[in-house]
Length: 465
Image 1 (cartoon, helix red, strand yellow):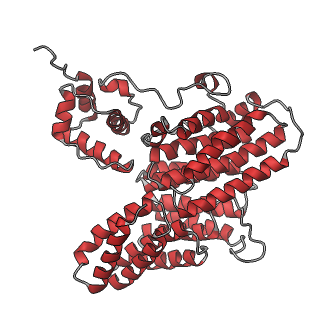
Image 2 (cartoon, rainbow, N blue to C red):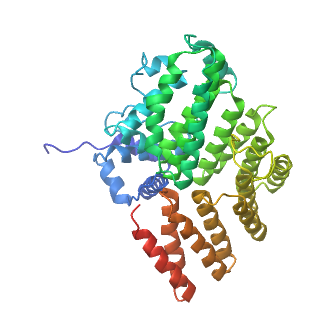
Image 3 (cartoon, rainbow, N blue to C red):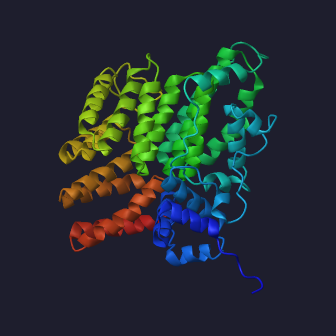
């Protein structure tokens, strides 16, 4: 019959190789969609339509490819789905500072220029912000061989004064400003950070300076890009967060900064664990600990080891998790407590509070609910009052542990504190927790304190964000 679509034999072959039913493919596509902030309801009928030749929208095709990639444990490009030509990678573009990215793939600055250029352009930013998190996409620089190659081939020409310390200090101050802006959630000041990287930081890195100055600028740029990645994590734009995490790794490698590199790996481990990719999280955390330089500050060591302990605990490795946690605490005790003399407010890693919170999550993963609650509450004592995001997330963790232990009234108190902090936030994660809170507590709606809490939660949902 004229106009009849051809059956999609390529997709059928992938289904057979993956040993999946129609329902299994639909279920996995829906799950990866949820991981990337999308509510999808594909079913076996949807898959049947695809097999009959129907072509879904590009983002759905990306989710299908990612589902097969995870199942088959090899890259499955869009073209292999039999649904038309493959879309270009978001970095298959021309570097505005000269040359195609493919010809200069070792240049972290060139890749950052393209990534931020797309993200700063209203017509193209959706390609960055709607990209799909790749659970097996770990195409990151290998330390130290590739970082050494980068430094030898990408060294800028010295064309200015040897110092330019004001540039370094300016980037450091900016990183501190945007980090504190992130306390209000990932949607707060994120566009400003993208513009700052695109309009100010990238041109400085391309301007040329003496090598020592350039390497220090790269380190400060790493911290800025790392902050942006964390903002995207909080806004549940996980593919964009992954792109910026990789960009930060490349900058740290070109800077020759093992500590910055390790801190970004730790953040990537946290992100993977939040998305349920436990083995990936463990691998990233192990790489972070092994990569950190021998002279890394104790607060960095504590941060890396506490994340390793958490990753090990989620894998059920109690012995190693307990040992890593004990080592992390030894390093932590070498750091002065926040608010005391000698504490470094600009430490390039998680604070004392973050390490203590990670200890609480590790204990929870090991089944020690009471000790986990104690550690999480202790972490709150070290958080500044304006750290709204971290406080809100911690209150939610405490509330769920209390609820799991049958302590309903105490859980309601913790949820109220979560809502206190939520008032200040523009956060995708906090909004998602709020939605889940309403669902989790409906079963207890007959209890008067729960009714009060649910009314307040309903009001919070209607608040413009």
